[in-house]
Each structure stands twice: as structure tokens, then as C-alpha cells.
Image (tube, rainbow, N blue to C red; front, side):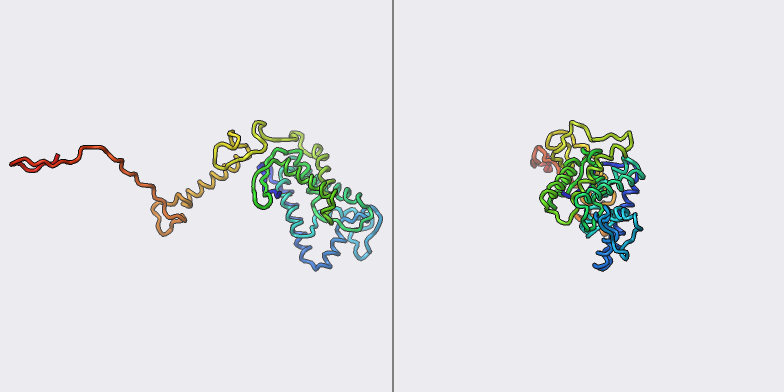
Length: 320
């Protein structure tokens, strides 16, 4: 289940979310341009290694980039590093869909602090699983999981457009999307299916977001926001029709879609595209179906007296 967008508007421009995405992409492009051996060295230098964070090991002097006693700074550098295109693509997509509303609920500066604190909690949660591990942890997944946890409490009834099994595209409540995501983390952790993935960092970051969001959000922002209760959470919505499968009015999340659809049709009319066309244009007609011509009215069949020709002797023929 891949999220595409949500129907949750914002009141501010999420500059911090945009900035985090930009920094992650730039760092990844710089890293991926290195040779494989150099990439491995950079991961050792800037990745969060549990054995170093908990004082069980140290990097060789030629690899150390942080002063002695400041090795914990690798937690922050590791948040902006990724191991592949799928890794950064998935993380940035989730941050793009869910980060703007969380930033809107707490402001720019507090959102940045919240993001970093969730990343710290995720790194420590992963490190506590094995404090002697010398495998570096990289990626924004832990900090991003905190954003998902915050969204889970703030906007559980918001609708998220998802791409399901790479075929179906439809809206589902955010609580279902994020609940499925955190549920899969527990399944993967118990089964060991995701080898090489810091699953515990995802779980720790998610619950850090759940715990911290009441302290970081604005006071006037309520938790567990949603639409009217009379609208069913799940349902089949048919675009362009006045009702859905429950014979009720279209759900609130469909208003934005219908507005976009109406605006697109209006633009097509003004530009002369589509079945409307532009009357009077032949060579520059933009319509793929040709110039639109309204149907001509067909004459209605009438009932009358048939024409009869009568001839009178000595008179001209007269038609009556």
C-alpha cells in the first residue's frame, strides 16, 4: 500500500518539510556518486554505530570525523543518509505526504526539533537491541516514523489516496494506512523477514511520535481530528455522481477531487479541447474529435390533408 497524497489541507507553507527532503536528496546524490568502497567508508564515518554510541568500541583515528566525546553526533548525520534509490524514495514520499500537516500543527521550529528528537529515540531504540553491534544504521526512517505516529494521533480520519498492489488506486482513512504500516513492522520484527533493516528503529520512532505530539502541537490543535460522523469511513465513491454506494451525499474528502475535476473540464472548454471544440476553426482546431457541431433539429412528422388535384370543366386546375 503506497500513499500518493492526502486530502488534508495546510494553513502554512511547510518549509521545514521541503528543506528536509532537499537535504536528504542532496546528501544521497553526493553519496551515490562515490565509488562503492568510498560509500562504505562514509557509512562507517557518519552512520550511527551502536557499539560506538554506547562506548563499546571506537573508530580508528583515520576514520573518525567527530571529536572524542562527540560521537553521538553521528545520530544526526545518519538521519540524512540512505542506502539506495528505493530507500530514499519511500522515505521521502512518506515525508512529503504526511510531514506538511504535522508541521502545520506545531510550527516550523518545533517540527524540526520534533523530527530530530524522534530520530534520536529511533537510533537509541535500535541500539538497545544490541549495544555491541558494529553495523552502522543510516536512513531517515526512524525520524519519519515519529512523523507518522504524530499524524496517526492528529488526523486519523483524514483520507489518503493509496496505490494498492500496484493496480488499485482509492482513498482509505489515515488510521488504516498508518495502522497497517506499524503492524507490518511488528510482523517483520517477530518473523525476521526484513534482514538488514532497522525495524526496531521504526517502532521506537513511531511510539516516540505518539508520546511527544501532545507536547509539541499547538494547544488549539485537537487530537483525533476527523469529518462528520454520519459519513461512512469506508465506502465506494463514484466520481462525477451525486451519491455513493450508501445512497448518501459524497464524502467530504471528495470535495477537492470534484473541484479539480470541474476546473479541469472548464479549462478544456475555454481552450477548445475535448468534445466541446472551438466553433469556426478548421486548421487550428485543437479537438482530437474535430470541430464540434451541434446536432441539427429533426422536423417532427405532421398530420394533415394530402394535396388533391381537382379539375373542373372550363376552369383551370386548382390545387386544394
